[in-house]
Length: 384
Picture 1 (cartoon, rainbow, N blue to C red):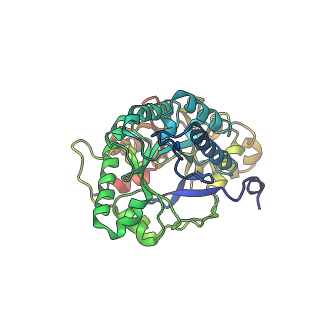
Picture 2 (picture 1 turned 30 degrees about the vertical axis):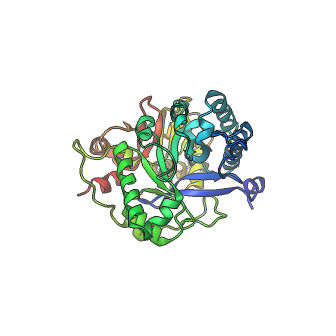
Picture 3 (picture 1 turned 90 degrees about the vertical axis):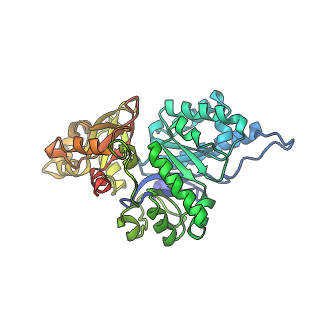
């Protein structure tokens, strides 16, 4: 048992988020105990009590703290309830304080805002989602399709990903109507430039069905056992990884946007040493790159896994570089805005003959790193 596992109580659970295109783990969800629905005020108030909100914040902080002890730099996915986010600035400030106490920066968290909420809270929830985005968090909206969350809220808040309600996913294989609903949500996510995440996949049949519907991100016991930890193997059905996705009609412009191919990036501060990058890459063997970012989460340099390891493994490589800044062995990032067409990103990738297959860094409207795009994914996705 590793020192980290000694520090992490067994009751915490961690689930890998799988990219069905590559079969790689691209994020880790940290689950705290008793993360169920918020209890409502016994006087039948439509809002949760202060104690319930504090408990929700505590669960999110507990999960984030346990996840930060793991030997991985993959983004951590933590969940808070929509009713909690609707409380506004004081609660969001407390959430930010607790997440920052883990030593991770906002861009290393995917904060999933889950659950239905009363219609009168819509503006408060939207304001909370915008505030989380401004702070640099990757924001998700959970339990879509079976909880109150107006669809135009997705267009208004531009979440990084949306998660389907687990019950909808569970019943889709045997219910054509619910399968049609998931397919419609996939198309909606594509159109909005976000990802759909399907949780709770338990069987190979469910995985293959979701892949066939065009879902890219998934999680559940079909991929890993309950005691899974980052670095341990995951199981992804080969057909689910290799079979082409469903044909989609081309958009009226130049086709799908690069955001459709974006996956979470592993990021580190621009001041890290080469040895720290090496440790990060050794912990996540499926990672192809590490993005070095500044204090505002803007990409400063990109470390390509293959070239970096070759430089360190050469004669005296480790002795020369290990304790010196990793940026010396990095390359300039190749940023692309999340809104550009994928074909334009593919053309940009081909402009540097020596770095054709280097990962592209996807940025938001403020130039902050949102994730990476693997060029091989673009080639597969754009092939006729």
